[in-house]
Image (cartoon, rainbow, N blue to C red; front, side, top):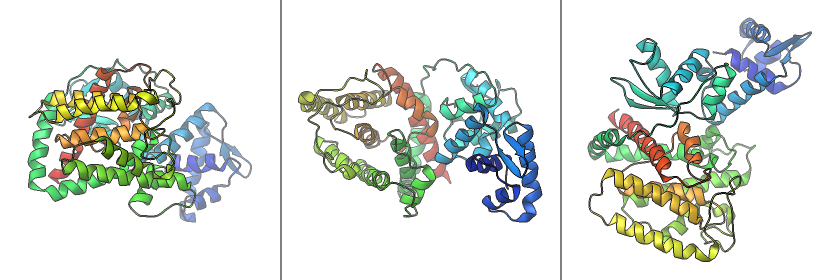
Length: 414
Protein backbone atom coordinates (compact mmCIF):
# COMPACT_ATOMS: atom_id res chain seq x y z
CA UNK A 1 0.00 0.00 0.00
CA UNK A 2 1.29 3.45 -0.95
CA UNK A 3 2.08 5.84 1.92
CA UNK A 4 2.55 9.59 2.06
CA UNK A 5 6.32 9.08 2.34
CA UNK A 6 6.34 7.05 -0.89
CA UNK A 7 4.55 9.96 -2.57
CA UNK A 8 6.91 12.54 -1.06
CA UNK A 9 9.99 10.60 -2.23
CA UNK A 10 8.73 10.59 -5.84
CA UNK A 11 7.96 14.32 -5.85
CA UNK A 12 11.20 15.36 -4.14
CA UNK A 13 13.29 13.20 -6.43
CA UNK A 14 11.56 14.71 -9.46
CA UNK A 15 12.82 18.17 -8.39
CA UNK A 16 10.47 20.09 -10.70
CA UNK A 17 6.70 20.30 -10.99
CA UNK A 18 4.96 16.93 -11.36
CA UNK A 19 1.31 16.13 -12.10
CA UNK A 20 -0.59 13.82 -9.75
CA UNK A 21 -1.20 11.31 -12.55
CA UNK A 22 2.54 11.12 -13.19
CA UNK A 23 3.13 10.39 -9.50
CA UNK A 24 0.67 7.53 -9.84
CA UNK A 25 2.58 6.16 -12.85
CA UNK A 26 6.00 6.50 -11.20
CA UNK A 27 4.69 4.55 -8.22
CA UNK A 28 3.65 1.80 -10.61
CA UNK A 29 -0.03 2.11 -9.68
CA UNK A 30 -3.12 2.30 -11.88
CA UNK A 31 -5.60 5.16 -12.11
CA UNK A 32 -7.90 3.57 -9.51
CA UNK A 33 -5.46 4.80 -6.84
CA UNK A 34 -5.36 8.34 -8.24
CA UNK A 35 -7.67 9.83 -5.59
CA UNK A 36 -5.81 8.27 -2.64
CA UNK A 37 -2.46 9.50 -3.96
CA UNK A 38 -3.87 12.96 -4.74
CA UNK A 39 -5.12 13.09 -1.12
CA UNK A 40 -1.57 12.38 0.08
CA UNK A 41 -0.26 15.17 -2.15
CA UNK A 42 -2.70 17.68 -0.68
CA UNK A 43 -1.88 16.51 2.83
CA UNK A 44 1.86 16.90 2.24
CA UNK A 45 1.21 20.42 0.97
CA UNK A 46 -0.64 21.22 4.22
CA UNK A 47 2.40 20.00 6.15
CA UNK A 48 4.56 22.40 4.10
CA UNK A 49 6.53 19.52 2.62
CA UNK A 50 5.15 20.12 -0.88
CA UNK A 51 3.88 23.16 -2.75
CA UNK A 52 0.68 22.96 -4.79
CA UNK A 53 0.92 24.88 -8.02
CA UNK A 54 -1.16 25.14 -11.14
CA UNK A 55 -0.62 21.89 -12.98
CA UNK A 56 0.93 19.88 -10.19
CA UNK A 57 3.06 19.67 -7.05
CA UNK A 58 6.71 20.17 -6.21
CA UNK A 59 8.83 19.84 -3.09
CA UNK A 60 9.13 22.74 -0.71
CA UNK A 61 12.73 23.92 -0.43
CA UNK A 62 13.54 23.75 3.29
CA UNK A 63 15.79 22.06 5.82
CA UNK A 64 12.88 19.86 6.88
CA UNK A 65 12.18 18.50 3.39
CA UNK A 66 15.89 17.92 2.80
CA UNK A 67 16.19 16.08 6.12
CA UNK A 68 13.14 13.94 5.33
CA UNK A 69 14.43 13.00 1.89
CA UNK A 70 17.87 12.15 3.29
CA UNK A 71 16.22 9.97 5.97
CA UNK A 72 14.34 8.11 3.25
CA UNK A 73 17.50 7.64 1.18
CA UNK A 74 19.46 6.47 4.23
CA UNK A 75 16.78 3.91 5.00
CA UNK A 76 16.74 2.66 1.41
CA UNK A 77 20.53 2.36 1.40
CA UNK A 78 20.47 0.25 4.55
CA UNK A 79 17.53 -1.97 3.58
CA UNK A 80 15.15 -0.36 6.08
CA UNK A 81 11.46 0.23 5.37
CA UNK A 82 11.22 3.96 6.04
CA UNK A 83 7.45 3.68 6.47
CA UNK A 84 8.07 1.78 9.71
CA UNK A 85 10.56 4.20 11.24
CA UNK A 86 9.10 7.50 10.03
CA UNK A 87 6.52 7.47 12.77
CA UNK A 88 6.19 10.18 15.41
CA UNK A 89 5.06 7.72 18.09
CA UNK A 90 8.13 5.58 17.43
CA UNK A 91 10.31 8.70 17.59
CA UNK A 92 8.80 9.58 20.97
CA UNK A 93 9.53 6.04 22.17
CA UNK A 94 13.14 6.27 20.95
CA UNK A 95 13.67 9.66 22.58
CA UNK A 96 12.41 8.40 25.93
CA UNK A 97 14.39 5.15 25.62
CA UNK A 98 17.67 6.94 24.95
CA UNK A 99 17.19 8.98 28.10
CA UNK A 100 16.43 5.92 30.20
CA UNK A 101 19.43 3.84 29.15
CA UNK A 102 18.22 0.30 29.67
CA UNK A 103 14.47 0.06 29.19
CA UNK A 104 12.08 -2.47 30.69
CA UNK A 105 8.38 -3.11 31.05
CA UNK A 106 8.32 -1.13 34.30
CA UNK A 107 10.05 2.11 33.32
CA UNK A 108 8.29 2.60 29.95
CA UNK A 109 4.94 4.39 30.24
CA UNK A 110 3.23 2.54 27.39
CA UNK A 111 1.18 -0.63 27.18
CA UNK A 112 2.93 -3.94 26.62
CA UNK A 113 1.67 -4.39 23.04
CA UNK A 114 3.01 -0.99 21.94
CA UNK A 115 6.28 -1.66 23.74
CA UNK A 116 6.69 -4.96 21.90
CA UNK A 117 5.70 -3.44 18.56
CA UNK A 118 8.31 -0.69 18.88
CA UNK A 119 11.10 -2.98 20.05
CA UNK A 120 10.26 -5.47 17.28
CA UNK A 121 10.62 -2.75 14.62
CA UNK A 122 13.97 -1.61 16.02
CA UNK A 123 15.18 -5.18 16.50
CA UNK A 124 14.34 -6.07 12.89
CA UNK A 125 16.86 -3.49 11.72
CA UNK A 126 19.57 -3.98 14.35
CA UNK A 127 18.73 -0.81 16.26
CA UNK A 128 18.12 -2.32 19.68
CA UNK A 129 19.61 -5.03 21.85
CA UNK A 130 16.85 -7.09 23.43
CA UNK A 131 18.60 -8.50 26.50
CA UNK A 132 15.57 -10.50 27.60
CA UNK A 133 11.97 -10.73 26.44
CA UNK A 134 10.25 -11.89 29.63
CA UNK A 135 10.62 -9.62 31.48
CA UNK A 136 11.58 -7.17 28.75
CA UNK A 137 15.02 -5.59 29.05
CA UNK A 138 16.50 -3.73 26.10
CA UNK A 139 18.86 -0.98 25.03
CA UNK A 140 18.12 1.24 22.04
CA UNK A 141 21.31 2.06 20.13
CA UNK A 142 22.03 5.69 19.33
CA UNK A 143 23.16 6.19 15.74
CA UNK A 144 22.90 8.74 12.93
CA UNK A 145 19.58 7.41 11.65
CA UNK A 146 17.79 7.61 14.99
CA UNK A 147 19.39 10.95 15.79
CA UNK A 148 18.12 12.49 12.54
CA UNK A 149 14.71 10.87 13.01
CA UNK A 150 14.37 12.63 16.35
CA UNK A 151 15.52 15.93 14.86
CA UNK A 152 12.93 15.59 12.07
CA UNK A 153 10.06 15.08 14.52
CA UNK A 154 11.30 17.89 16.76
CA UNK A 155 12.31 15.87 19.79
CA UNK A 156 14.96 17.51 21.89
CA UNK A 157 16.67 14.60 23.48
CA UNK A 158 19.56 13.99 25.75
CA UNK A 159 21.38 10.72 25.33
CA UNK A 160 22.65 9.46 28.65
CA UNK A 161 26.37 8.80 29.00
CA UNK A 162 27.49 5.41 27.69
CA UNK A 163 26.74 2.85 30.35
CA UNK A 164 29.69 0.80 31.57
CA UNK A 165 27.41 -2.19 31.53
CA UNK A 166 28.72 -5.72 31.80
CA UNK A 167 26.85 -8.36 29.78
CA UNK A 168 29.04 -11.36 30.55
CA UNK A 169 26.28 -13.19 32.45
CA UNK A 170 23.85 -12.79 29.55
CA UNK A 171 26.50 -13.75 26.99
CA UNK A 172 27.40 -16.92 28.93
CA UNK A 173 23.75 -17.91 29.06
CA UNK A 174 23.31 -17.42 25.31
CA UNK A 175 26.61 -19.20 24.60
CA UNK A 176 25.37 -22.30 26.43
CA UNK A 177 22.15 -22.26 24.41
CA UNK A 178 24.13 -21.73 21.20
CA UNK A 179 26.48 -24.66 21.84
CA UNK A 180 23.59 -26.98 22.62
CA UNK A 181 21.56 -25.94 19.56
CA UNK A 182 24.51 -25.99 17.18
CA UNK A 183 25.46 -29.49 18.33
CA UNK A 184 21.94 -30.64 17.40
CA UNK A 185 22.03 -29.21 13.89
CA UNK A 186 25.43 -28.19 12.50
CA UNK A 187 24.09 -27.93 8.95
CA UNK A 188 21.49 -25.40 10.05
CA UNK A 189 24.12 -23.33 11.81
CA UNK A 190 26.32 -23.28 8.70
CA UNK A 191 23.36 -22.03 6.65
CA UNK A 192 22.72 -19.30 9.23
CA UNK A 193 26.40 -18.31 9.14
CA UNK A 194 26.14 -18.06 5.35
CA UNK A 195 23.09 -15.81 5.66
CA UNK A 196 25.10 -13.39 7.83
CA UNK A 197 27.77 -12.95 5.14
CA UNK A 198 25.84 -10.45 3.02
CA UNK A 199 24.90 -7.98 5.78
CA UNK A 200 28.43 -8.20 7.20
CA UNK A 201 30.00 -7.52 3.81
CA UNK A 202 27.68 -4.54 3.38
CA UNK A 203 28.18 -3.15 6.90
CA UNK A 204 31.95 -3.61 6.84
CA UNK A 205 32.40 -1.98 3.44
CA UNK A 206 29.95 0.83 4.18
CA UNK A 207 32.37 1.86 6.94
CA UNK A 208 35.05 2.13 4.24
CA UNK A 209 32.96 4.32 1.93
CA UNK A 210 31.67 1.75 -0.55
CA UNK A 211 28.50 3.38 -1.99
CA UNK A 212 26.63 0.17 -2.89
CA UNK A 213 23.35 -0.20 -0.97
CA UNK A 214 22.29 -3.26 1.01
CA UNK A 215 19.55 -4.14 -1.53
CA UNK A 216 22.13 -3.99 -4.35
CA UNK A 217 24.62 -6.00 -2.26
CA UNK A 218 21.96 -8.70 -1.98
CA UNK A 219 21.42 -8.61 -5.76
CA UNK A 220 25.16 -8.97 -6.38
CA UNK A 221 25.96 -11.70 -3.86
CA UNK A 222 22.73 -13.67 -3.57
CA UNK A 223 20.96 -13.18 -6.89
CA UNK A 224 24.20 -12.87 -8.92
CA UNK A 225 22.76 -9.81 -10.70
CA UNK A 226 24.94 -6.74 -11.27
CA UNK A 227 22.84 -3.54 -11.42
CA UNK A 228 23.89 -1.50 -14.45
CA UNK A 229 24.39 1.76 -12.56
CA UNK A 230 27.17 0.47 -10.27
CA UNK A 231 30.89 1.09 -10.62
CA UNK A 232 32.94 -1.97 -11.56
CA UNK A 233 35.51 -1.37 -8.81
CA UNK A 234 32.80 -1.08 -6.15
CA UNK A 235 31.22 -4.33 -7.32
CA UNK A 236 34.62 -6.08 -7.31
CA UNK A 237 35.20 -4.84 -3.77
CA UNK A 238 31.93 -6.43 -2.60
CA UNK A 239 32.56 -9.75 -4.36
CA UNK A 240 36.17 -9.98 -3.22
CA UNK A 241 35.32 -9.25 0.39
CA UNK A 242 32.66 -11.94 0.46
CA UNK A 243 35.22 -14.41 -0.88
CA UNK A 244 37.62 -13.46 1.92
CA UNK A 245 34.82 -13.67 4.49
CA UNK A 246 33.80 -17.17 3.33
CA UNK A 247 37.39 -18.37 3.54
CA UNK A 248 37.79 -16.88 7.00
CA UNK A 249 34.68 -18.68 8.31
CA UNK A 250 35.89 -21.96 6.81
CA UNK A 251 39.32 -21.56 8.41
CA UNK A 252 37.86 -20.64 11.80
CA UNK A 253 35.53 -23.67 11.72
CA UNK A 254 38.55 -25.88 10.96
CA UNK A 255 40.44 -24.34 13.90
CA UNK A 256 43.15 -23.07 11.60
CA UNK A 257 45.26 -20.65 13.60
CA UNK A 258 45.94 -17.20 12.30
CA UNK A 259 49.39 -16.52 10.90
CA UNK A 260 50.93 -13.63 9.03
CA UNK A 261 50.69 -15.59 5.79
CA UNK A 262 47.01 -16.38 6.35
CA UNK A 263 46.26 -12.71 6.97
CA UNK A 264 48.20 -11.73 3.86
CA UNK A 265 46.07 -14.24 1.95
CA UNK A 266 42.83 -12.73 3.31
CA UNK A 267 44.00 -9.27 2.36
CA UNK A 268 45.07 -10.43 -1.09
CA UNK A 269 41.63 -11.92 -1.69
CA UNK A 270 39.70 -8.97 -0.27
CA UNK A 271 41.74 -6.42 -2.23
CA UNK A 272 42.13 -8.25 -5.55
CA UNK A 273 40.77 -5.17 -7.27
CA UNK A 274 43.99 -3.41 -6.17
CA UNK A 275 46.52 -5.95 -7.41
CA UNK A 276 49.44 -3.51 -7.01
CA UNK A 277 49.39 -3.81 -3.19
CA UNK A 278 46.97 -6.64 -2.37
CA UNK A 279 48.56 -9.11 0.04
CA UNK A 280 51.73 -7.05 0.52
CA UNK A 281 53.09 -5.27 3.59
CA UNK A 282 53.28 -1.56 2.92
CA UNK A 283 56.58 0.25 2.44
CA UNK A 284 55.14 3.77 2.60
CA UNK A 285 53.59 5.95 5.31
CA UNK A 286 49.80 6.12 5.39
CA UNK A 287 47.21 7.89 7.51
CA UNK A 288 43.55 7.60 8.49
CA UNK A 289 41.46 9.99 6.43
CA UNK A 290 39.73 12.47 8.74
CA UNK A 291 41.66 11.39 11.84
CA UNK A 292 45.26 12.63 11.91
CA UNK A 293 45.49 11.66 15.61
CA UNK A 294 45.29 7.94 14.83
CA UNK A 295 48.80 6.59 15.45
CA UNK A 296 50.10 4.25 12.78
CA UNK A 297 53.30 2.19 12.85
CA UNK A 298 55.98 3.45 10.44
CA UNK A 299 56.76 0.97 7.62
CA UNK A 300 60.19 0.02 8.91
CA UNK A 301 58.72 -1.26 12.20
CA UNK A 302 55.67 -3.12 10.84
CA UNK A 303 57.15 -6.63 10.78
CA UNK A 304 58.66 -6.22 14.23
CA UNK A 305 55.29 -5.12 15.66
CA UNK A 306 53.46 -7.94 13.88
CA UNK A 307 55.88 -10.47 15.32
CA UNK A 308 55.18 -9.16 18.82
CA UNK A 309 51.44 -9.32 18.21
CA UNK A 310 51.55 -12.89 16.90
CA UNK A 311 53.73 -13.97 19.79
CA UNK A 312 50.96 -12.81 22.15
CA UNK A 313 48.27 -14.33 19.92
CA UNK A 314 49.93 -17.74 19.80
CA UNK A 315 50.47 -17.71 23.53
CA UNK A 316 46.82 -16.83 24.14
CA UNK A 317 45.18 -19.41 21.85
CA UNK A 318 47.26 -22.18 23.41
CA UNK A 319 45.73 -21.51 26.79
CA UNK A 320 43.25 -24.10 28.02
CA UNK A 321 39.72 -22.86 28.58
CA UNK A 322 40.31 -19.10 28.88
CA UNK A 323 37.46 -17.26 30.60
CA UNK A 324 34.95 -15.39 28.43
CA UNK A 325 36.08 -12.04 29.81
CA UNK A 326 39.70 -12.87 28.88
CA UNK A 327 38.69 -13.88 25.34
CA UNK A 328 36.74 -10.66 24.72
CA UNK A 329 39.45 -8.44 26.20
CA UNK A 330 42.14 -10.13 24.14
CA UNK A 331 39.99 -9.79 21.01
CA UNK A 332 39.73 -6.04 21.68
CA UNK A 333 43.48 -5.76 22.21
CA UNK A 334 44.17 -7.81 19.08
CA UNK A 335 41.76 -5.68 17.00
CA UNK A 336 43.18 -2.35 18.12
CA UNK A 337 46.79 -3.45 17.97
CA UNK A 338 46.50 -4.74 14.39
CA UNK A 339 44.57 -1.68 13.28
CA UNK A 340 47.20 0.65 14.72
CA UNK A 341 50.02 -1.35 13.12
CA UNK A 342 48.10 -0.79 9.88
CA UNK A 343 50.30 -3.11 7.80
CA UNK A 344 48.69 -2.43 4.40
CA UNK A 345 48.37 0.56 2.10
CA UNK A 346 44.59 0.12 2.15
CA UNK A 347 42.04 -2.39 3.42
CA UNK A 348 43.39 -2.52 6.98
CA UNK A 349 40.15 -2.03 8.88
CA UNK A 350 38.14 -4.55 6.88
CA UNK A 351 40.96 -7.06 7.37
CA UNK A 352 41.07 -6.28 11.10
CA UNK A 353 37.38 -7.15 11.40
CA UNK A 354 37.89 -10.41 9.51
CA UNK A 355 40.72 -11.63 11.70
CA UNK A 356 39.07 -10.49 14.94
CA UNK A 357 35.96 -12.46 13.98
CA UNK A 358 38.24 -15.41 13.16
CA UNK A 359 39.82 -15.19 16.61
CA UNK A 360 36.44 -15.13 18.35
CA UNK A 361 34.88 -17.91 16.28
CA UNK A 362 37.89 -20.17 16.69
CA UNK A 363 37.32 -19.81 20.45
CA UNK A 364 33.61 -20.69 20.11
CA UNK A 365 32.31 -17.12 20.34
CA UNK A 366 30.35 -16.64 17.11
CA UNK A 367 30.41 -13.08 15.78
CA UNK A 368 29.17 -12.90 12.22
CA UNK A 369 28.18 -9.24 11.84
CA UNK A 370 28.18 -5.82 13.48
CA UNK A 371 24.55 -4.74 13.84
CA UNK A 372 23.58 -1.60 11.96
CA UNK A 373 22.77 0.31 15.14
CA UNK A 374 26.26 -0.25 16.58
CA UNK A 375 28.29 0.67 13.50
CA UNK A 376 28.61 4.35 14.45
CA UNK A 377 29.67 3.50 18.00
CA UNK A 378 32.13 0.88 16.75
CA UNK A 379 33.69 3.39 14.36
CA UNK A 380 33.95 6.01 17.12
CA UNK A 381 35.88 3.57 19.30
CA UNK A 382 38.24 2.33 16.57
CA UNK A 383 39.66 4.30 13.65
CA UNK A 384 37.43 7.28 14.40
CA UNK A 385 38.86 7.69 17.89
CA UNK A 386 41.42 10.38 18.66
CA UNK A 387 42.95 8.22 21.37
CA UNK A 388 43.00 4.45 21.72
CA UNK A 389 40.39 3.26 24.21
CA UNK A 390 40.23 -0.51 24.61
CA UNK A 391 37.77 -0.20 27.51
CA UNK A 392 35.08 1.43 25.36
CA UNK A 393 35.59 -1.02 22.52
CA UNK A 394 35.25 -3.82 25.09
CA UNK A 395 31.81 -2.48 26.03
CA UNK A 396 30.89 -2.23 22.36
CA UNK A 397 32.11 -5.77 21.65
CA UNK A 398 29.99 -7.22 24.47
CA UNK A 399 26.86 -5.76 22.85
CA UNK A 400 27.96 -7.01 19.41
CA UNK A 401 28.56 -10.53 20.75
CA UNK A 402 25.27 -10.66 22.65
CA UNK A 403 23.35 -9.32 19.65
CA UNK A 404 24.90 -11.99 17.40
CA UNK A 405 24.16 -14.79 19.84
CA UNK A 406 20.55 -13.68 20.25
CA UNK A 407 20.03 -13.63 16.47
CA UNK A 408 21.80 -16.97 15.88
CA UNK A 409 19.90 -18.72 18.68
CA UNK A 410 16.61 -17.29 17.50
CA UNK A 411 17.22 -18.80 14.04
CA UNK A 412 18.50 -22.11 15.44
CA UNK A 413 15.33 -22.53 17.51
CA UNK A 414 13.04 -22.27 14.48
